Image (cartoon, rainbow, N blue to C red; front, top):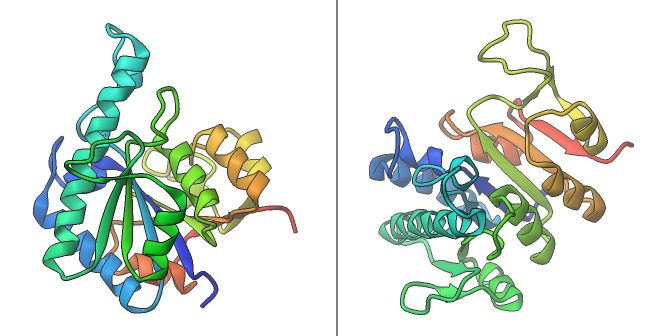
Length: 235
């Protein structure tokens, strides 16, 4: 097993499935089943979920940015609780931790407690992003990956990896099998924001970018059997 402890970054849109917003519970349950396969195989999995299926703070021009970001954090908590419920239906031990304290629904994020949960085979879902405005959930994923000492950050997308341009718009888009952190930043590739990429680079956390829409692709990606792109330091 090349990677033991995984930080999986999911967008809110993944939980929405074919819907334009909200949560598709059948899709969420199917996603939980795929993650369960990895848990059963011995992987320790932490998850950061976005909230774009409910709210996009940056695009709200009529509201204070910090307030808008806090509303977005509430969206990530709704997604985290829904995904957590799907795991419970599958008898997968799970804990939801949030970067903002809300004791009635989730644990407050504490690094050592999260690590102990992972060591005991529990899935840990991190809500509220970093707990502070002005930071994306991509940056939260990089931060949590560093804190729990994840062996890899796995970024779920709707395409097979990292391309030099949008493959949905350009038939001649070139896919990278491997690429360095600096090339991602310098080429302006739309993978994760530069803060997240820089943090992973500084902590030498490799990033795997894969297609979550292909059934069973998460486990294949962790086993090195998919067409995912690996982002790492220059060899």
